[in-house]
Length: 348
Image (cartoon, rainbow, N blue to C red):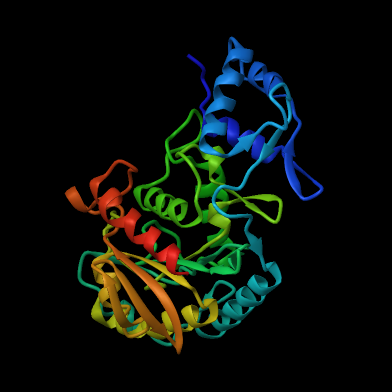
């Protein structure tokens, strides 16, 4: 049995493809790559896996005996990123945060003492945990704008006064590039929150399987990880946790005071699709994401500072029992998250 899947081989093909006259072609020897991975019967394995990719409509051969592969685009074309526009957004967000929340490593929020004094006994307060914004946030595909924001409650781990740059490193570099959806050898398994986030992004942007090699999008001919194509914004920029745990215990005071920072962040990012993770998070976000029309049980058309935005409202991926969705086989993901996000993409 081959120690490689069709998804893994497709990731290798995509990473090694070159554009020739507007067509993506992989001319690298797949057999040599399979042999380098120590896979027996490399010729037979190559044939079987390429046939599987052809069946999916991901590749085709110029002629039956060709060793080159042409990458097709079954989902409707390539993504385009307005990197300059994203950099402008990040600069504006950095300017706002520097003036209102975190200036370098100095926490300057005017509500600091009010919020910290409101937490219950037995809890710890962690301040100034800023957002993650991917460098390819401003995406379009066939004219559709894919500005995707995932909204959680607060950062679950430790870490005081985390800058935008540090948050990018933790989400994109550490969780995205270093960790894996499923743990593999020296690569740790992502936590349930980021596993669910991965599944949501796959549904929005497209991408087969759960292998790491297929977590990369073709953006202007470059291979870009999913985590570089979205923003992760928490409803709270400070966290109250039960001591020595990641169990969030935010207060009404914290939620009220931090609403202005959440609103400012969302206005700067101008998302077209928002994925809300958590029932309480959704309930406490509706003064910023103002519902206009409920399209289904978990799909709402909202107003964000005069702009239309589509919002999927879900439980947290690490929720208990039937509401958990950090696995592609979970009932909640299959019956709630997947169909909702597919409907949202159709309406973009």
